[in-house]
Amino acid sequence: MIEIHNLSKHFGAIRAVDGVSFKVERGTVLGFLGPNGAGKSTTMKMLTGFLHPSGGTAQVCGFDVREQPLEAKRCVGYLPEGAPLYPDMTPAAFLDFVAGIRGLSGERKRTRIAEVVAEVNLQSVMHQRIETLSKGFKRRVGLAQAILHDPQVLVLDEPTDGLDPNQKHEVRSLIRSMAKDKVIVLSTHILEEVEAVCTRVMIIARGKVVIDCTPSELASRSRWHNAVTLRVPASGAEKVAEKVRSLADVESVERLDGAGGLVSFLITPVKHRNIAAEIGARARAEGWEVDELRVEHGRLDEVFRELTLSKAS
Amino acid sequence: MKNSNLKNIAILFRRELAGYFATPVAYVFIVIFLLLSGILTFNQAGFYERGQADLAPFFTWHPWMYLFLIPAISMRLWAEERKQGTIELLMTLPVTMGQAVVSKFLAAWAFAGIALGLTFPMWLTVNYLGEPDNGVILAGYLGSFLMAGGYLAIGASVSALTKNQVIAFVISVMLCFLFILAGFPTVLDFFSAWASPLVLDTIASFSFLTHFNDIMRGVIDARDLVFFASLIGCFLLANAIVVELKKAD
Image (tube, rainbow over all chains, first blue to last red; front, side, top):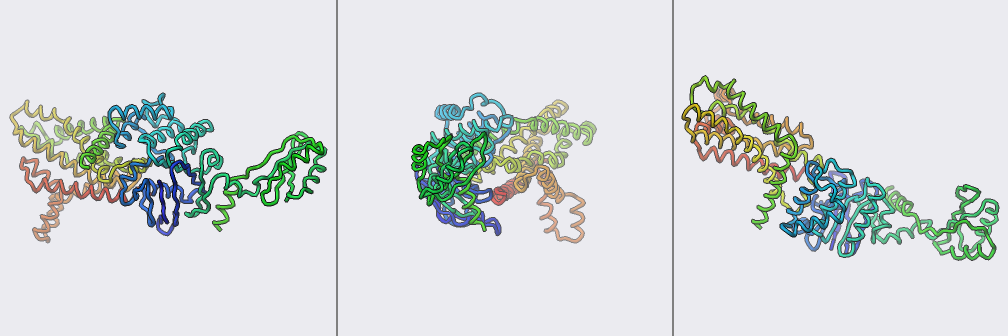
């Protein structure tokens, strides 16, 4: 439903977006990851018709954003970065305004606003001026505005930025609940968010796509994918470490900080092989006093740093 | 298509006009406008002393009052949208640039019209005291309203240039002042010494004063109407272009 081909945007000599191409199909939650200034927001602004591309094409629901901007805008819901809203309006007046522009009227408008307001939990503040609302409520007003016309494509620029953990959780559940029959594109620099809601992840750095895969594939690129954390009492720790080191698929054993008479080791396998089972079996057979044995899925922040920094130099 | 055009303009217009009354700005503006027009008419223009039943002393001050008051209405039109970032919201809704520009302008114009309409006690007074030519008074109101539209169109396009309302205000005042100055006797005298009458007429024809004074006398000439209409048209076109160029800054 989204088709972007060789899209680019220059601001003077700066190439904010430099030849980005991708396609997204219904049911996908695509997460844009990238350092600040990487071109995530600019790409979204072109996708939603706010900025004109310097080159390339962007199609939403089959409409080119430049050739048929109104048709494209009709099938997109957009939450701009920072969720800008008219501070003097109440959520009730604001949502009524957006619904009108989105072509809803009469009974349909009333029921749809009521539905969305219930979905994002805005009932209690409908008649307060937006400028007096907390950040969490403002964000919800922004989300309500974006989903009011039940768009096929939803573009959310940092939807959970600045929210507290409970609010983040709410927004993520909302996104997941809508994901089934829509295309959702969101940008974030919170890596856990990618794992929590996205089915596909794209890392953008310096205006280019550096990787496009699923969150688990991304994690598997981590040095620590399938590594094992083992915590044992300090007394027999060195002996255990020695034995682990002698296992066939173990690349290295790193001693981490210990506390309360316990010591942790990070055991990295050769070529991401699965070593947890073997270590577990050995522990049982030899009667190690194991406090904790945990498999690492990989660290997204490490992959993120590696991908965005190495391409930058 | 035509229908949805009007519908969008109506919805945007309503939001915009309600925006004036959502804050004290509208009330402060109206009170000051009424106070000023009263003081200027009675104290400065000698409404009673003239002993004539007309509203000329009232209308004479309008170009000068508008010079400061109209940019105060127009300064927030686009500067505020850009500062709050709501322009991104507005421009990604399915509305065209033309609809956005026109509805914002119309809302500001309607607001100015409300303020102007509230000076009706002035009209009642003059009718109570004497027997004025109400046709001339009506023409005066029409001319004043058209002139307000001209000031607003200039102010709206300046407002799109900056995120700062104060800057928008100051530049609008300066630009509007040029449009008054062009018809000022001292300015025209300065040119009349050496410029050909054609040049002189061209300069004078750009002035709000020239056209407003014509209409105020009760002569509604098509040329004056065309002047204000094309001025508004040109500046709204400039407004749309400026918004397009600057919206992403």
